[in-house]
Amino acid sequence: MAKLMSLLWGAGSPPCWRVMITLEEKKLQGYKRKLLSFEKGEHKSQEVLVVNPRGQLPAFKHGDIILNESCATCLYLENQFKSQGIKLIPDSADDQATMYQHMMEGLALTDKLNSVIYYDCSVPEEERHDSAVKRNKEALTAELKLWEGYLENVAAGSYLAGAFSLADVIVFPSIACAFRFGLSVGRYPKLAKYYSLLKNRASIKTTWPPHWVASPQGYDILKDL
Ligand SMILES: N[C@@H](CCC(=O)N[C@@H](CS)C(=O)NCC(=O)O)C(=O)O
Image 1 (spheres, rainbow, N blue to C red):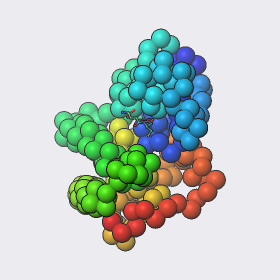
Image 2: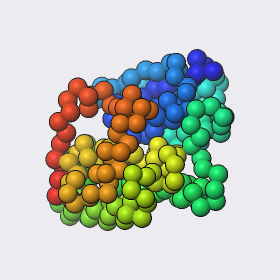
Image 3: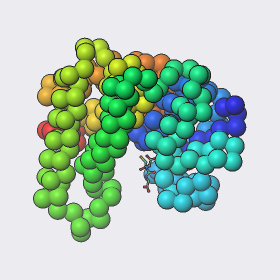
Image 4: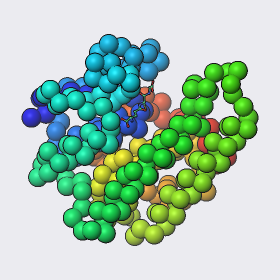
């Protein structure tokens, strides 16, 4: 089945990482995948545009079915391969509600993270303002504190919605990205604990961004948050 699947992806992209973790968890190894370079602008190539007219990654195909939104792809894979690999949507009403809630909130976290980390790449120099940088950092800090609070309420050594679920698949890559970009372990102890619990999970370890493995030293953009 995985042989009919193909993924165009970019390294270090949380949305791409979500799809790769899901494919691992659902035992769909063996799919075709092609690593494209954002630096070289390969995400705007014709090869991507036919799958995703926005020229964004991930761009996923299962036979003739196209999915170019990461959350939609993860939900699709879980629903199509329910009994294969790990079950990623819990049954209980409580856990399911928490899972869907955190999954969707995870998108806000990614947006706020991007608005700080990629500010210089996404805003032309003449349009940049210190006040915007400050506002984006404040919004990200408030968001991260929310997540620190959510993790305060889950049992120690636990996941976002009971057992490992799509909430973790969607949110973890952004948390990992935050620490890669210098988030303070001391100021966000619950997030740091969650990060160290999940980073060794097989599906996550095998799909760890290759350039993070090659150069483990990250950045310090978020160190003051
Ligand atoms: N909604 C999309 C967002 C994908 C996305 O933002 N991809 C980024 C990489 S992390 C991208 O391709 N950016 C290039 C661009 O927007 O031109 C999803 O979750 O799949």
